[in-house]
Length: 76
Image (cartoon, rainbow, N blue to C red):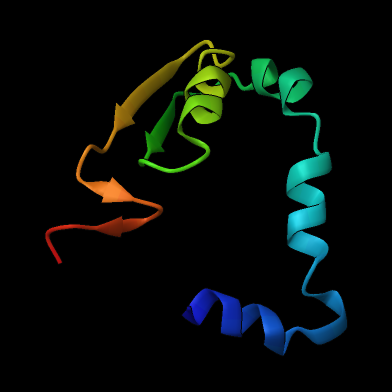
């Protein structure tokens, strides 16, 4: 809920992040990453898409966190 409240404080510019994220052509850009990249994935609606995107990165380490859901840990 706090993330949502933070976004509301941005008022007329709050949608910029979402617009950038969903309009960025990552399929074209991710293969250009040449440095070692750690992809940390949680359990959410984007789990499969994040896994697929990680496979586009040549020097990549992938970790999937099983005890999370949408960025929150069950151990907290």
